[in-house]
Length: 380
Image (cartoon, rainbow, N blue to C red):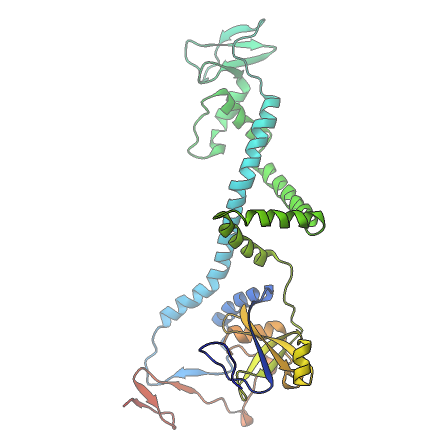
């Protein structure tokens, strides 16, 4: 029987009812296997099948292969760090800094600042403290035991200890920071140093952030919360241009953070795409009732992953009697698929009788052909 599906028809034997559907493996194991396999390929020298080039051919590309293997080891952790840094920078720039600035300017500064436009009644006029940023002809004052100095504009007065603290720790705001140019700017930096140092703000922010995410997740997973999210999504998707961006971003986030995963029951081998060719698959459940009735026996839904990237694949329905259960774990099967058959579990390795090693496969160079005895010769 020939499967229908456009120009690339794939033959199927009578035991198959192919249901072509592109699926994404939402299992975290696939990513872990890819990382572990990249390290295994650089460290392991014990391969079940030895594929070698012709012995007469010179050994080339050793340096290039070493560089590629080094990239295979370095890139996974490096890219992970880059992604985490990018995520933190996004959270810091678009969440932490606006929240921090709002709390500082609208809550703390109005609560602690002591600023005067002119010396109050009863103040003792004195010279500005040495080292202040005021002009030489400007004078500060002492009021209620505190010394006040003019700000750089000369229009407002603020406590001298604020100016001294900020000026003495100006490097805490970066190597290129300059002294503030107004009383408000001085109070802003003073509050940062005194009440909101980064060593306190970041841990508190992370705790509040994750607690807030937890409660939002609980709120919007059912009832009125789910209705609110559905209504909000429907409203946004009606807005031209915005709906395209929002829809794409929502698909990505739903895929990345959805808890629903495809659970695999076991690993099986089935004859696919034709009799005599065996492929590994993951049993995801029982087949559809109508298909089982048409076949006359129970059916299995089997996910057929693709090499070397098993995150994508397609689903077939196969007779239960035609699926062979394999003594493999999901991780071992994924290693086999990612490596294109190079990494075989020790329990599944096949040794030829008499301890003979598998016959070496001669890979001909471009323009050569291989004869039955294994010799290479120029192609006609």
